[in-house]
Each structure stands twice: as structure tokens, then as C-alpha cells.
Amino acid sequence: MQPVKEPGFRQSVDLMFNRAVALMDLPPGLEEKIRVCNATYTVRFGVRLRGQIQTFTGYRSVHSEHMEPVKGGIRYALSVNQNEVEALAALMTYKCALVEAPFGGSKGGLCIDPRDWDDHELEQITRRFAYELIKRDMINPAQNVPAPDMGTGEREMAWIADQYARMNTTDINSKACVTGKPLNAGGIAGRVEATGRGVQYALQEFFREPEDKKKAGLSGTLDGKRVIVQGLGNVGYHAALFLSTEDGARITGIVERDGALFNPEGLDVEAVREWINRHGGVTGYPEGQFVTDGASVMEEECDILIPAALEGVLNLENAERIQAPLIIEAANGPITAGADEILRRKGCVIIPDLFANAGGVTVSYFEWVKNLSHIRFGRMQRRQEEARHQLIVDELERLSADSGIGWQLSPGFKDKYLRGAGELELVRSGLDDTMRTAYQSMRAVWHARGDVEDLRTAAYLVAIDRVASSYRAKGL
Ligand code: GLU
Image: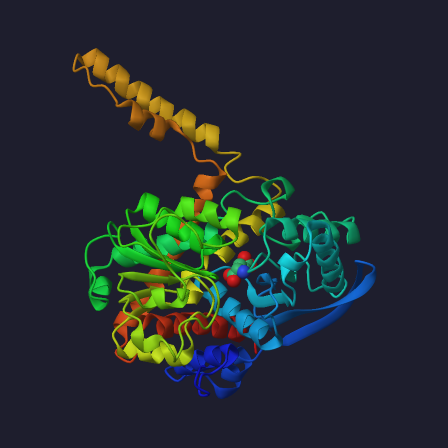
């Protein structure tokens, strides 16, 4: 049982917002304008399934239209409600501002457990929900562009894009009405991995800053760091996979719905994921220790804790027992405002959600641009880049031979250097740049201002300031 004083998700976001604006000099009217959610549309629709009409409830909330289109995912979960969708829409506003994705914030949700329905039924439900939103311009390339979130993925986005195209047969930009589509339906390389990849880039940037590491009592690189991941869904899986296979981190704990796995020697992320796909949970996985009370594993000693699933998993009830010196919020809102205060008091450094999981919307932005420009990234430059690199390699080899020095370029170097960047490389490069730049803008405020204690407040300050500037420029 959680104590009654635990604020809800939406209150938590408001409290965090208020803590930041208290340090700013915004006119009170503007402060209020930025904080409130502009509109939330609730729709109840029926679909004839299994011989009867089933009624579903869905939402699309628009938090801020200081830039359009507004952007944010659509979530399928039984826990979806208006407050949650509004909190998530607000986070989208700040997230987009922080990573300079030119969007306002929005979010949608459908109260449904996708596991209760088969593929064909889900398609009918998704198309009907999309129809309701499209006819009110709540899905539209210029106004409101959804994306995947919990419980949805490429498949749902493809259905939505197709539904929009059917209803807008002459819209040449119809594919840009939604992002996170499969590659063969107008998607972009690297979107599925994007949020997890962004978490990796965020941590890499953090570990480049000795002063920041010191605040968390950490040193060195990501190599050998002990990491506990809560939730091995799309985000948690990719973050854990890249951190362990590319940066040498050790995944010592994986917390899932049915329990947790713990192994101080490190778990094989790919193997655990395969096990979950086959068995529906981590129960019975042959390696490591299985812990029935999964959430308790978040309290184990580690270097980095990555909550990557639900909101509110770190709350007033367990915050005091958390030992991780560094937490990166791969999920939206995993730490309640109350827990945030406790953890900060304990000296824990928190890399906040609006930055940490912004990789998804960043690559969504690239996908939207790709759809509007109707050309794959790298298509014009790739071979030209390769040809120019080949010129240098040929010249070096000629000089080496002519001068009799006999230098040989190593084959590994040649292969890497001669390969022009395709879409995936460009997307990763753009994402890395975005995460580094955003981290630096947040960190600059954190270090420069004596009254800013933590990265979250710094992130909100940067984001709110940018939203305020857009409103001012609009003449509001
Ligand atoms: N649902 C993701 C998020 O919370 C992605 C949003 C998007 O790509 O528009 O950031």
C-alpha cells in the first residue's frame, strides 16, 4: 500500500514543472498557459467483434501547440486514463523542446489490453480508433502526428497510416501522418531501436563528464558498470543490449512482470529476451537467480538503474531503499515527485525522462522529415562520399608505392573508411548529436546556476524557456 500523500502522475509532472518555474521570471499568465493541457478529446466507439458490439474508450490529448504538428505516441493499456494521457502529453512538450524537435506535445491512449485480442481484431479496433481521430484532424501530417508507445508498435502505425491514406486519397504527404512505421510502409531505419539507443548515447555523454560522474560517486567508463533494468520491452531491451554488447556494461538485474532475474556476473540480454518471447516471462530462465518479488531487485546494489517500463515504479514506498547512485529514466515518469525528492536528498543523480527517452521522438522527427521530402536519407550522397574516399585511398597507396616506403593501409581501416553512410548510420549520427547537444544544454544550466540542484530542474528550465520564447515570438 502506498501512503496517501503520493501524488498522481499528472500532479508529479506539475510539481516538477512548478519547481522549475519558481526559478524563472515568467509572467504568471504565460506560466499558466504553458502548464495547462490545451485540450483532451475522449472518444468511445463500438466495434462488432465476437458476435457483439464492444465499446472502447480512447483519448488524444494536446498539451501545447506553440509548434505544430504536435507529437506523441499512442499507448494501448488497461491503465490508460485522462490524467495519464495529459501528463504524458505535457512531457512530450518539454521533451521536444529540449531536443529541438519542432513539435508541440501530444499523447494518445486506448483502454485495452492488446493481449486480449487477436491480430485481426486489433486491426479493426486500431482502424476504427484512427478513423475517429483522423476525421477530427487529430491525426494529420501538419497538425498531429502519433507514434508508438507502450503496447503499440510498427504494425499499429502501419494500420493508422493506411487508414489515413484511405480517407485522404490526394494527400501527397499522407505517410507523414504517423511515425514509427515499418520500413516498407514509409518508416525509417533505426526507429525501433531509437529510444534504447538514445539511452545509451545519453549515458555515454554523461560518462564523458568527470564532474558529473563525480556527483554520482562514479568514475571511469561504462565498461564493467553494473546495470539493473526494469522492463525488457522495446526500450529496456535495446538499452540493455547496446550497453552490454557495445560498452561492456554488466546487466546484473532484469525486472519483469512475473519476477526478476539477478546475476552479479551479468545476464545475456538477447537470451533473456528470447526466453520472454517464448515463455511470456522470465520465470524458469536457467541462468542467474529468479526473484519472485521482482521490484525488490531494483533495490539491489548497482551502478546504474534503468526504469524502462511504467510510471511511478520508484515511489515513496521504495525510494529510501534504492541504492543506485545513478538512475536514468528510460520510461516516462518512473519516479514520482515524492521519490524524486528522497533520491535527490540521498545524493542520487537522476537523468530525467524528458531527456533520457527523447531518442524515440528524435528519430520520429527524422522519419517525418523523410516522409515530407519523399527520399531516403543518404540516397544522394552515399556513393559520392565513397568515391571521394576511394580517391584518397588510391592516392595514399600510390604515394606509398612510388616513394618505396611500402605502407599498407589495414583492410579493416579501408573497409570502414570506404563505406559511405547509409540511412541507419545517418540516423544514429543525428541521434547521437541530438543527445549530446541536449545533454550539454541541460548540464550547462545545472552547473552554472547555484539554485539548480539537479538535471531534471535544469532540463525543465531549458525546455520551458524555449516554449516561452515560441509563445512570445507568436505574440502571445
Ligand atoms: N512514445 C514515444 C515517447 O514517449 C515516442 C513519441 C514520438 O515518437 O512521437 O517519447
